[in-house]
Structure formats: C-alpha cells, structure tokens
Image (cartoon, rainbow, N blue to C red):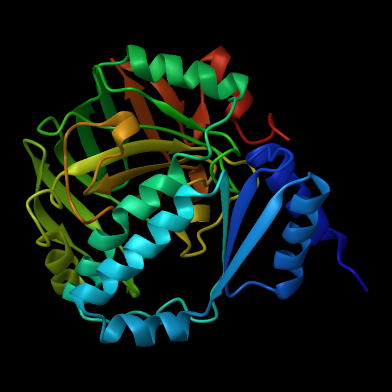
Length: 335
C-alpha cells in the first residue's frame, strides 16, 4: 500500500520549499532514505512539470571512498559535482542514517580535505533555496538587526557578545525541512564568558556530550566535554575554529527533544546555538574555517531554563519569547 506521508512531504518540498516550475531541473540526492520517498519526489517533480535527476548514496560506500581519497580524486569529484549543480535550477537533499558514527574512523586530515574540496559545491546548493519568510520570523529578524549586545544566561551559561551590524537570516521551510530558526553572527572578537550545551552532538562521526566552552575576546580558551581531547583537536583544525561563526535562535514547535541530528536539533523549540568555525556569507563576521559545528542548548524549564537579553531587555525566558511581536513563535502559538 502506498504511504501518503511520502507524497505529502514530497508535495511540500517541491511546491513550497523549492517552488519548482515547468521545465526546471531539480537534483534529488538521497542518503539512506526509503526508496518510496525518493520515488514520491520524482512523481511530485514531474507533476509540477519539472525534470528530476537522482543520485543515491550509502554511508558505508562513502566511508570506503573517504578512507583512501587522494587530493586529485577529490578535486575531480568536486569539479564534476559543481558542473552538474550549475545545470540545476533546484536541489533537494534527503538524509537518513543506519549508523550515525559510520565516518568516525576516517582520519581528520581526510575529513578536512573533503570539506575543503566540496565547499564550493555546497555553496552552489545552498544559494538555490531562499524564499518568502513568515511574519513572526520577520519581526525577530528586525529585532536582531537592531540589537547590539546579546546576553545569554542559564545553567552553566553566562555569555555575552555583540551582533551589531550583522544581518539576520530567516530559515522558514524554504531551506531545510524541518526548519524554524533565525540566525545572525557575533562580532568575531566580542564573545566573552562561558556556555554549556545540553544537547548531545555528533561531529565527524564522534559523539560529544556536555560540551562547555569558555571565551575571552572572542576566542575559545578552554573546551571540555566527555571527549575533551577530540573536541580540542577539532577546535585546533585552523585559526578560525576557535571563534564563533553563527548565533541562532530555534523555535520549531514540533521539534522538542534532541536526536543527535543537527538539522533537527538546531530547530528545537526554546533553543539557541552557537557555532565555532566558518561564518555564512549572509551573516558574515569574517571568520573563516573548515569547521562549522552547531552546538545547541535548550532553555525550556525541563532542560534547566534560561534567559536571553537584547540590549538589556529580556527577550526570551525559559524558551518563550516575551515581546508581543514574537509570541507567535512560541510553542503552542504556532501550528
């Protein structure tokens, strides 16, 4: 029996997220997701008059390629992927996983090389998906762009920084599914204090819990977790990895608990995240790094609570926005 949930999601992605038009091309990349979902996307793209292209991936195969990948091989691969992407009008990536630690034994230098070679391809993919934004998110965007000083307080957290002059970017279902965040970026040398992240994280196939970072003049000067040595090895990848490249507030009302999948976890209702490493061009503080590691903390009461201040005004308490123009983003006020 055909599962209509696949068809409903495919319709959402094609008609709302990418707004595919007649004769436009779309590349569908599927990593360990049910074939039925990929087939539903093909149908939806054709129903919209589009031309679908598909590539499937398996994590075990990707691991085998990565373990012995040479610089020349990766350069050829990146060139091929970039040439193909430039012929696409839209891009949809579906990501699943049978083993979230599949790549944990790929050497760090290989992971760095892969990230470096594929960055232009990723940039090409990302630029295809900006669309109209939701009213509540627009209000948050305006407020963030009017803000200078941000203070975040909570269990194991007392941190402050400036976002003055940095654009804020809305993510409202036209970039990722699920979605629900507005992000900006601290001025590179402005971050002071310490922060503890209560959401478990996976990075380079390694599980990290209880990450705590201490900052001085923007730089991470102390970092601990259940894997302190590996954490610091990643943060020592390059000069920019110990500086923050993103600050974001998450508020998806249907994403409530950590999954160790950052595309879900960064959208958790009542959360914020800070990102050591590369800044996005759309909200750029000039920081450059091969690392981009979203670290998430939930501030709802059951996770310890917390407060966020913009220029001394309390904006969010225990995961709930207080200003009237932002209350529509609170859990229970959105559908």
